[in-house]
Length: 459
Image (cartoon, rainbow, N blue to C red; front, side, top):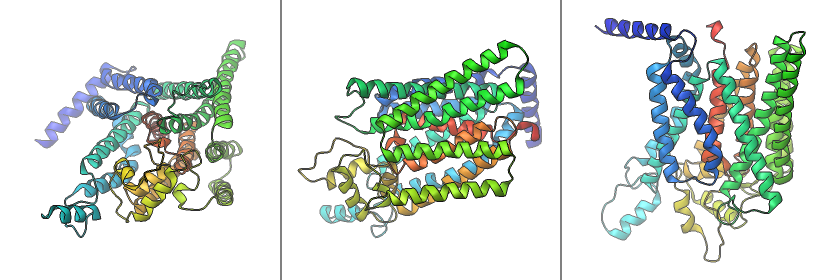
Protein backbone atom coordinates (compact mmCIF):
# COMPACT_ATOMS: atom_id res chain seq x y z
CA UNK A 1 0.00 0.00 0.00
CA UNK A 2 2.82 2.40 0.77
CA UNK A 3 4.42 1.81 -2.61
CA UNK A 4 1.05 2.15 -4.32
CA UNK A 5 0.36 5.45 -2.52
CA UNK A 6 3.72 6.99 -3.34
CA UNK A 7 3.50 5.63 -6.88
CA UNK A 8 0.18 7.39 -7.28
CA UNK A 9 1.61 10.61 -5.84
CA UNK A 10 4.58 10.49 -8.22
CA UNK A 11 2.28 9.86 -11.18
CA UNK A 12 0.16 12.82 -10.20
CA UNK A 13 3.29 14.96 -9.84
CA UNK A 14 4.53 13.97 -13.29
CA UNK A 15 1.11 14.64 -14.82
CA UNK A 16 1.13 18.10 -13.27
CA UNK A 17 4.63 18.77 -14.62
CA UNK A 18 3.53 17.74 -18.11
CA UNK A 19 0.61 20.14 -17.80
CA UNK A 20 3.15 22.95 -17.28
CA UNK A 21 6.09 21.89 -19.49
CA UNK A 22 7.69 25.32 -19.77
CA UNK A 23 6.14 27.65 -17.25
CA UNK A 24 6.03 27.59 -13.50
CA UNK A 25 3.59 25.47 -11.54
CA UNK A 26 0.96 27.96 -10.28
CA UNK A 27 1.60 27.43 -6.57
CA UNK A 28 5.37 27.73 -6.98
CA UNK A 29 4.81 30.86 -9.00
CA UNK A 30 2.70 32.22 -6.16
CA UNK A 31 5.50 31.50 -3.69
CA UNK A 32 7.95 33.18 -6.07
CA UNK A 33 5.79 36.30 -6.28
CA UNK A 34 5.38 36.30 -2.50
CA UNK A 35 9.17 36.22 -2.15
CA UNK A 36 9.56 39.14 -4.55
CA UNK A 37 6.87 41.04 -2.65
CA UNK A 38 8.60 40.36 0.66
CA UNK A 39 11.91 41.61 -0.72
CA UNK A 40 10.17 44.66 -2.19
CA UNK A 41 8.58 45.78 1.09
CA UNK A 42 11.69 45.14 3.19
CA UNK A 43 12.85 48.80 3.14
CA UNK A 44 9.53 49.78 4.73
CA UNK A 45 10.29 47.38 7.57
CA UNK A 46 13.29 49.49 8.52
CA UNK A 47 10.94 51.94 10.22
CA UNK A 48 7.92 49.67 10.76
CA UNK A 49 9.59 46.70 12.45
CA UNK A 50 8.05 45.18 15.56
CA UNK A 51 6.28 42.14 17.10
CA UNK A 52 3.35 42.35 14.66
CA UNK A 53 5.73 42.30 11.70
CA UNK A 54 7.50 39.28 13.19
CA UNK A 55 4.18 37.46 13.55
CA UNK A 56 3.23 38.24 9.94
CA UNK A 57 6.65 37.03 8.82
CA UNK A 58 6.06 33.69 10.54
CA UNK A 59 2.67 33.39 8.84
CA UNK A 60 4.19 34.26 5.47
CA UNK A 61 6.96 31.69 5.87
CA UNK A 62 4.49 28.96 6.80
CA UNK A 63 2.24 29.72 3.82
CA UNK A 64 5.12 29.96 1.34
CA UNK A 65 6.70 26.70 2.54
CA UNK A 66 3.34 24.96 2.21
CA UNK A 67 2.93 26.27 -1.34
CA UNK A 68 6.39 25.12 -2.39
CA UNK A 69 6.20 21.78 -0.63
CA UNK A 70 2.85 20.88 -2.18
CA UNK A 71 3.64 21.79 -5.76
CA UNK A 72 7.36 21.77 -6.51
CA UNK A 73 8.28 19.68 -9.56
CA UNK A 74 9.71 16.23 -9.00
CA UNK A 75 13.03 17.10 -10.66
CA UNK A 76 13.43 20.32 -8.72
CA UNK A 77 12.47 18.57 -5.45
CA UNK A 78 15.35 16.10 -5.69
CA UNK A 79 17.81 18.83 -6.59
CA UNK A 80 16.51 21.02 -3.76
CA UNK A 81 16.93 18.19 -1.25
CA UNK A 82 20.58 17.73 -2.20
CA UNK A 83 21.22 21.47 -1.83
CA UNK A 84 19.35 22.10 1.39
CA UNK A 85 20.32 18.94 3.31
CA UNK A 86 23.72 20.15 4.65
CA UNK A 87 22.25 23.51 5.65
CA UNK A 88 19.26 21.83 7.32
CA UNK A 89 21.54 19.63 9.42
CA UNK A 90 23.50 22.69 10.55
CA UNK A 91 20.44 24.87 11.12
CA UNK A 92 18.75 22.41 13.45
CA UNK A 93 21.47 22.81 16.10
CA UNK A 94 20.56 26.38 17.23
CA UNK A 95 16.85 25.44 17.15
CA UNK A 96 17.43 22.49 19.46
CA UNK A 97 19.48 24.64 21.84
CA UNK A 98 16.78 27.33 22.03
CA UNK A 99 14.22 24.64 22.76
CA UNK A 100 16.42 23.22 25.53
CA UNK A 101 16.68 26.69 27.04
CA UNK A 102 12.91 26.76 27.58
CA UNK A 103 12.60 23.31 29.22
CA UNK A 104 11.82 23.16 32.98
CA UNK A 105 14.97 22.23 34.87
CA UNK A 106 15.96 21.81 38.51
CA UNK A 107 17.01 25.06 40.16
CA UNK A 108 20.68 24.01 40.29
CA UNK A 109 20.73 23.67 36.48
CA UNK A 110 18.63 26.71 35.61
CA UNK A 111 19.49 30.40 35.53
CA UNK A 112 20.27 31.88 39.00
CA UNK A 113 17.33 34.25 38.65
CA UNK A 114 14.96 31.35 39.32
CA UNK A 115 16.74 30.50 42.58
CA UNK A 116 16.29 34.11 43.68
CA UNK A 117 12.62 33.94 42.76
CA UNK A 118 12.19 30.70 44.72
CA UNK A 119 13.80 32.27 47.77
CA UNK A 120 11.66 35.39 47.48
CA UNK A 121 8.38 33.51 47.03
CA UNK A 122 9.16 30.70 49.47
CA UNK A 123 7.73 28.02 47.18
CA UNK A 124 9.48 25.47 44.94
CA UNK A 125 9.93 26.63 41.35
CA UNK A 126 10.99 24.70 38.25
CA UNK A 127 13.30 27.09 36.49
CA UNK A 128 14.89 27.07 33.05
CA UNK A 129 18.03 28.30 31.34
CA UNK A 130 16.16 31.24 29.88
CA UNK A 131 14.99 34.03 32.15
CA UNK A 132 11.93 34.56 29.92
CA UNK A 133 10.55 31.34 28.35
CA UNK A 134 7.93 33.30 26.39
CA UNK A 135 10.53 35.53 24.73
CA UNK A 136 12.66 32.51 23.88
CA UNK A 137 9.74 30.69 22.27
CA UNK A 138 8.97 33.80 20.21
CA UNK A 139 12.64 33.94 19.14
CA UNK A 140 12.45 30.26 18.19
CA UNK A 141 9.39 30.91 16.00
CA UNK A 142 11.21 33.83 14.39
CA UNK A 143 14.18 31.55 13.70
CA UNK A 144 11.91 28.99 12.04
CA UNK A 145 10.47 31.78 9.90
CA UNK A 146 13.98 32.67 8.70
CA UNK A 147 14.62 29.02 7.83
CA UNK A 148 11.32 28.96 5.97
CA UNK A 149 12.29 31.99 3.90
CA UNK A 150 15.64 30.35 3.15
CA UNK A 151 13.87 27.19 1.99
CA UNK A 152 11.47 29.13 -0.24
CA UNK A 153 14.24 31.32 -1.69
CA UNK A 154 16.32 28.24 -2.52
CA UNK A 155 13.38 26.38 -4.03
CA UNK A 156 12.08 29.13 -6.30
CA UNK A 157 15.50 30.25 -7.56
CA UNK A 158 16.57 26.86 -8.87
CA UNK A 159 15.11 28.12 -12.12
CA UNK A 160 17.62 30.50 -13.78
CA UNK A 161 15.01 33.03 -14.89
CA UNK A 162 13.63 33.32 -11.38
CA UNK A 163 17.15 33.54 -9.99
CA UNK A 164 17.86 36.57 -12.17
CA UNK A 165 14.63 38.24 -11.05
CA UNK A 166 15.49 37.75 -7.37
CA UNK A 167 18.98 39.16 -7.95
CA UNK A 168 17.54 42.24 -9.67
CA UNK A 169 15.05 42.83 -6.86
CA UNK A 170 17.78 42.51 -4.24
CA UNK A 171 19.94 44.97 -6.16
CA UNK A 172 17.04 47.40 -6.39
CA UNK A 173 16.13 47.17 -2.71
CA UNK A 174 19.68 47.56 -1.41
CA UNK A 175 20.40 50.44 -3.79
CA UNK A 176 17.21 52.16 -2.70
CA UNK A 177 18.25 51.76 0.95
CA UNK A 178 21.66 53.27 0.17
CA UNK A 179 20.03 56.22 -1.61
CA UNK A 180 17.74 56.76 1.38
CA UNK A 181 20.72 56.81 3.72
CA UNK A 182 22.53 59.35 1.56
CA UNK A 183 19.49 61.65 1.35
CA UNK A 184 18.81 61.16 5.06
CA UNK A 185 22.28 62.15 6.22
CA UNK A 186 22.82 64.96 3.73
CA UNK A 187 19.38 66.40 4.51
CA UNK A 188 19.80 66.22 8.27
CA UNK A 189 16.71 64.05 8.78
CA UNK A 190 16.11 61.82 11.82
CA UNK A 191 13.53 59.31 10.63
CA UNK A 192 16.07 56.47 10.83
CA UNK A 193 15.79 56.48 14.59
CA UNK A 194 18.87 58.33 15.78
CA UNK A 195 16.91 59.69 18.73
CA UNK A 196 15.09 56.55 19.92
CA UNK A 197 16.73 53.48 18.38
CA UNK A 198 20.09 52.99 16.68
CA UNK A 199 19.07 49.56 15.40
CA UNK A 200 17.37 51.07 12.35
CA UNK A 201 20.53 52.91 11.39
CA UNK A 202 22.58 49.74 11.76
CA UNK A 203 20.09 47.81 9.61
CA UNK A 204 20.17 50.25 6.72
CA UNK A 205 23.97 50.24 6.85
CA UNK A 206 23.90 46.44 6.65
CA UNK A 207 21.68 46.68 3.56
CA UNK A 208 24.25 49.01 2.00
CA UNK A 209 27.03 46.48 2.61
CA UNK A 210 24.93 43.78 0.99
CA UNK A 211 24.25 46.18 -1.87
CA UNK A 212 27.96 46.55 -2.62
CA UNK A 213 28.26 42.78 -3.08
CA UNK A 214 25.00 42.26 -4.97
CA UNK A 215 25.53 45.14 -7.40
CA UNK A 216 29.05 43.88 -8.13
CA UNK A 217 27.61 40.41 -8.78
CA UNK A 218 25.01 41.93 -11.11
CA UNK A 219 27.78 43.70 -13.05
CA UNK A 220 29.68 40.40 -13.35
CA UNK A 221 26.47 38.78 -14.59
CA UNK A 222 26.11 41.42 -17.31
CA UNK A 223 29.68 40.84 -18.47
CA UNK A 224 29.36 37.06 -18.53
CA UNK A 225 26.02 37.15 -20.33
CA UNK A 226 27.50 39.40 -23.00
CA UNK A 227 30.54 37.14 -23.43
CA UNK A 228 28.40 34.02 -23.86
CA UNK A 229 25.64 35.54 -26.00
CA UNK A 230 27.27 38.38 -27.92
CA UNK A 231 26.67 38.76 -31.62
CA UNK A 232 27.86 41.14 -34.31
CA UNK A 233 24.84 43.42 -33.91
CA UNK A 234 25.08 46.73 -32.15
CA UNK A 235 21.81 46.01 -30.30
CA UNK A 236 23.45 43.30 -28.18
CA UNK A 237 26.28 45.62 -27.22
CA UNK A 238 23.86 48.45 -26.49
CA UNK A 239 21.87 46.25 -24.13
CA UNK A 240 25.09 45.14 -22.45
CA UNK A 241 26.31 48.72 -22.05
CA UNK A 242 23.01 49.81 -20.48
CA UNK A 243 22.89 46.85 -18.09
CA UNK A 244 26.51 47.30 -17.02
CA UNK A 245 26.07 51.06 -16.57
CA UNK A 246 23.02 50.57 -14.34
CA UNK A 247 24.90 48.05 -12.20
CA UNK A 248 27.92 50.33 -11.86
CA UNK A 249 25.73 53.29 -10.87
CA UNK A 250 24.01 51.14 -8.24
CA UNK A 251 27.43 49.97 -7.01
CA UNK A 252 28.61 53.58 -6.76
CA UNK A 253 25.52 54.58 -4.73
CA UNK A 254 25.98 51.73 -2.24
CA UNK A 255 29.71 52.41 -1.96
CA UNK A 256 29.15 56.13 -1.43
CA UNK A 257 26.68 55.45 1.36
CA UNK A 258 29.25 53.29 3.13
CA UNK A 259 32.35 55.40 2.60
CA UNK A 260 30.67 58.63 3.69
CA UNK A 261 28.38 57.50 6.50
CA UNK A 262 29.49 54.10 7.86
CA UNK A 263 32.07 53.34 10.53
CA UNK A 264 35.53 52.09 9.58
CA UNK A 265 34.90 48.49 10.81
CA UNK A 266 31.79 48.24 8.63
CA UNK A 267 33.70 49.58 5.63
CA UNK A 268 36.40 47.00 6.35
CA UNK A 269 33.75 44.24 6.42
CA UNK A 270 32.37 45.37 3.05
CA UNK A 271 35.89 45.47 1.60
CA UNK A 272 36.55 41.91 2.79
CA UNK A 273 33.32 40.70 1.20
CA UNK A 274 34.10 42.44 -2.08
CA UNK A 275 37.63 41.02 -2.00
CA UNK A 276 36.18 37.53 -1.59
CA UNK A 277 34.07 38.02 -4.71
CA UNK A 278 37.04 39.35 -6.68
CA UNK A 279 39.29 36.48 -5.59
CA UNK A 280 36.75 33.89 -6.70
CA UNK A 281 36.37 35.59 -10.08
CA UNK A 282 40.15 35.86 -10.54
CA UNK A 283 40.61 32.17 -9.72
CA UNK A 284 38.00 31.25 -12.30
CA UNK A 285 39.34 33.63 -14.96
CA UNK A 286 42.93 32.43 -14.59
CA UNK A 287 41.92 28.79 -14.35
CA UNK A 288 43.82 28.28 -11.12
CA UNK A 289 43.44 24.98 -9.31
CA UNK A 290 42.04 24.32 -5.89
CA UNK A 291 45.41 24.62 -4.16
CA UNK A 292 46.06 28.05 -5.66
CA UNK A 293 42.60 29.18 -4.68
CA UNK A 294 43.10 27.91 -1.13
CA UNK A 295 46.44 29.73 -0.90
CA UNK A 296 44.87 33.00 -2.05
CA UNK A 297 41.97 32.59 0.34
CA UNK A 298 44.29 31.81 3.25
CA UNK A 299 46.44 34.84 2.46
CA UNK A 300 43.41 37.11 2.30
CA UNK A 301 42.05 35.69 5.56
CA UNK A 302 45.41 36.14 7.29
CA UNK A 303 45.63 39.76 6.12
CA UNK A 304 42.10 40.46 7.33
CA UNK A 305 42.83 38.96 10.76
CA UNK A 306 46.08 40.92 11.04
CA UNK A 307 44.39 44.21 10.16
CA UNK A 308 41.50 43.53 12.52
CA UNK A 309 43.87 42.68 15.37
CA UNK A 310 45.91 45.81 14.76
CA UNK A 311 42.87 48.07 14.97
CA UNK A 312 41.13 46.17 17.76
CA UNK A 313 40.38 47.89 21.03
CA UNK A 314 40.20 46.46 24.53
CA UNK A 315 37.42 44.48 26.17
CA UNK A 316 35.38 41.56 24.97
CA UNK A 317 35.86 40.59 21.31
CA UNK A 318 32.15 40.94 20.61
CA UNK A 319 32.23 44.61 21.69
CA UNK A 320 35.60 45.87 20.43
CA UNK A 321 34.30 47.24 17.13
CA UNK A 322 30.96 48.64 18.37
CA UNK A 323 31.87 52.20 17.40
CA UNK A 324 28.34 53.31 16.47
CA UNK A 325 26.69 52.07 19.66
CA UNK A 326 25.91 54.57 22.49
CA UNK A 327 28.84 54.82 24.88
CA UNK A 328 26.68 53.94 27.89
CA UNK A 329 25.38 50.75 26.31
CA UNK A 330 28.76 49.08 25.75
CA UNK A 331 29.74 48.94 29.48
CA UNK A 332 26.30 47.56 30.29
CA UNK A 333 26.70 44.82 27.72
CA UNK A 334 30.18 44.13 29.07
CA UNK A 335 28.77 43.63 32.58
CA UNK A 336 26.03 41.34 31.27
CA UNK A 337 28.55 39.22 29.37
CA UNK A 338 30.68 38.97 32.50
CA UNK A 339 27.73 37.66 34.51
CA UNK A 340 26.41 35.32 31.82
CA UNK A 341 27.29 31.66 32.14
CA UNK A 342 28.00 29.31 29.27
CA UNK A 343 24.29 28.40 28.73
CA UNK A 344 23.30 32.04 28.13
CA UNK A 345 20.22 33.85 29.39
CA UNK A 346 17.80 32.65 26.72
CA UNK A 347 17.14 33.73 23.15
CA UNK A 348 15.31 37.05 22.91
CA UNK A 349 16.01 38.11 26.50
CA UNK A 350 18.47 40.99 26.08
CA UNK A 351 15.69 43.58 26.31
CA UNK A 352 14.63 42.06 29.64
CA UNK A 353 18.17 42.21 31.01
CA UNK A 354 18.83 45.82 30.06
CA UNK A 355 16.72 47.46 32.81
CA UNK A 356 18.37 45.23 35.42
CA UNK A 357 21.95 46.23 34.58
CA UNK A 358 21.55 49.88 33.68
CA UNK A 359 22.39 52.56 36.25
CA UNK A 360 20.06 55.36 37.14
CA UNK A 361 22.18 57.92 35.31
CA UNK A 362 22.67 55.75 32.19
CA UNK A 363 21.15 57.32 29.08
CA UNK A 364 20.06 54.49 26.79
CA UNK A 365 18.53 55.33 23.42
CA UNK A 366 18.92 51.87 21.95
CA UNK A 367 17.18 48.62 22.82
CA UNK A 368 19.34 46.30 20.66
CA UNK A 369 22.64 45.01 21.95
CA UNK A 370 25.74 46.89 20.77
CA UNK A 371 26.55 44.10 18.29
CA UNK A 372 24.89 40.99 16.93
CA UNK A 373 27.75 38.85 18.25
CA UNK A 374 27.36 40.29 21.75
CA UNK A 375 23.64 39.54 21.75
CA UNK A 376 24.25 35.94 20.67
CA UNK A 377 26.93 35.52 23.35
CA UNK A 378 24.56 36.85 26.00
CA UNK A 379 21.40 35.04 24.97
CA UNK A 380 22.78 31.72 23.71
CA UNK A 381 26.12 31.65 25.52
CA UNK A 382 29.73 31.98 24.42
CA UNK A 383 30.05 28.32 23.29
CA UNK A 384 26.98 28.78 21.08
CA UNK A 385 28.55 31.86 19.50
CA UNK A 386 31.66 29.94 18.48
CA UNK A 387 29.56 26.99 17.34
CA UNK A 388 27.56 29.33 15.11
CA UNK A 389 30.78 30.76 13.69
CA UNK A 390 31.94 27.25 12.83
CA UNK A 391 28.61 26.58 11.11
CA UNK A 392 28.97 29.82 9.17
CA UNK A 393 32.44 28.74 8.00
CA UNK A 394 31.01 25.41 6.82
CA UNK A 395 28.30 27.23 4.90
CA UNK A 396 30.93 29.55 3.42
CA UNK A 397 33.01 26.58 2.25
CA UNK A 398 29.97 25.00 0.59
CA UNK A 399 29.24 28.20 -1.30
CA UNK A 400 32.86 28.73 -2.34
CA UNK A 401 33.10 25.16 -3.57
CA UNK A 402 29.96 25.68 -5.61
CA UNK A 403 31.32 28.93 -7.03
CA UNK A 404 34.60 27.30 -8.11
CA UNK A 405 33.02 24.13 -9.50
CA UNK A 406 30.06 25.72 -11.27
CA UNK A 407 30.33 26.67 -14.93
CA UNK A 408 28.20 29.67 -15.80
CA UNK A 409 26.19 31.43 -13.09
CA UNK A 410 29.06 30.96 -10.66
CA UNK A 411 28.60 34.57 -9.58
CA UNK A 412 25.47 33.57 -7.62
CA UNK A 413 27.22 31.33 -5.04
CA UNK A 414 30.25 33.64 -5.11
CA UNK A 415 28.03 36.60 -4.20
CA UNK A 416 26.31 34.57 -1.47
CA UNK A 417 29.70 33.57 -0.03
CA UNK A 418 30.77 37.23 -0.06
CA UNK A 419 27.55 38.20 1.72
CA UNK A 420 28.32 35.59 4.38
CA UNK A 421 31.77 37.13 4.88
CA UNK A 422 30.32 40.64 5.14
CA UNK A 423 27.56 39.71 7.57
CA UNK A 424 29.88 37.64 9.76
CA UNK A 425 32.33 40.51 10.16
CA UNK A 426 29.55 43.06 10.57
CA UNK A 427 28.07 40.95 13.37
CA UNK A 428 30.98 42.22 15.49
CA UNK A 429 30.40 45.86 14.48
CA UNK A 430 26.71 46.57 15.10
CA UNK A 431 23.31 44.98 15.73
CA UNK A 432 21.89 45.52 12.26
CA UNK A 433 21.73 41.82 11.39
CA UNK A 434 18.69 41.29 13.61
CA UNK A 435 16.64 43.82 11.64
CA UNK A 436 13.80 42.21 9.69
CA UNK A 437 14.73 44.00 6.46
CA UNK A 438 18.31 42.71 6.67
CA UNK A 439 17.15 39.20 7.53
CA UNK A 440 14.90 39.09 4.47
CA UNK A 441 17.54 40.37 2.03
CA UNK A 442 20.37 38.30 3.48
CA UNK A 443 18.30 35.10 3.58
CA UNK A 444 17.10 35.61 0.00
CA UNK A 445 20.69 36.17 -1.18
CA UNK A 446 21.87 33.05 0.66
CA UNK A 447 19.04 30.97 -0.78
CA UNK A 448 19.83 32.28 -4.25
CA UNK A 449 23.48 31.27 -3.87
CA UNK A 450 22.58 27.81 -2.57
CA UNK A 451 20.11 27.20 -5.39
CA UNK A 452 22.70 28.07 -8.04
CA UNK A 453 25.70 26.42 -6.37
CA UNK A 454 25.19 23.25 -8.40
CA UNK A 455 23.88 22.74 -11.90
CA UNK A 456 20.82 20.54 -12.40
CA UNK A 457 22.28 19.15 -15.61
CA UNK A 458 25.04 17.42 -13.64
CA UNK A 459 22.54 15.54 -11.56
